Image 1 (cartoon, one colour):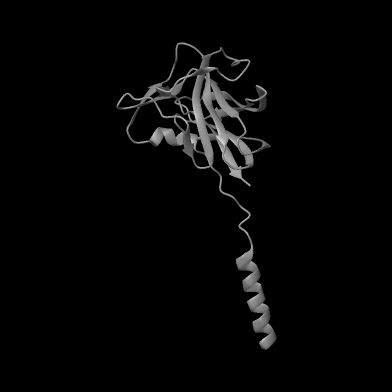
Image 2 (cartoon, helix red, strand yellow):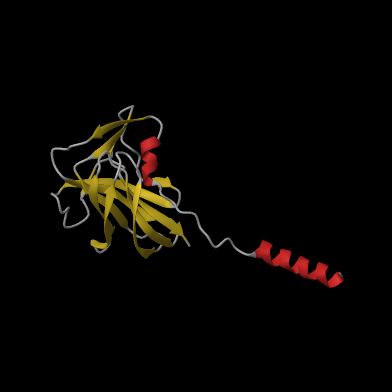
Length: 186
């Protein structure tokens, strides 16, 4: 009986000391759509095809496992993940939206990212949710959400294949949070 009690005590000690190896998935960019003090206009058929999205930096080392969209349309959309230091696309996928305003994610090969890496995620689309502050003020970038520092919202008219590089025009007054990532910190 004494041995059983000792084994049970050791088991409890070992299980209480193990680190939780499963970090939670963070999908922070869609949260702009539910932020208080903002208004949302729905654009279902824009006059041009844009590439738009967010420049961001992870605050922790981790990995990006999926790219996501939330758009007011049923269609397939191209999403790109950029390394902005080298201006290269490091992941790209097409994601199908099967309902207006639904959240849809596409798997990518995990992209390991270090804390402070300069990254961008963008969608190619002529549809979007246009979000602005009710008081008319610009968004105060950088904005921290979970383990990401969101540096800016960027956009460019590019055509159906998107831009050759991450969109260079920043817009702090009106943003379109229709693209997202899944980030898992190490």
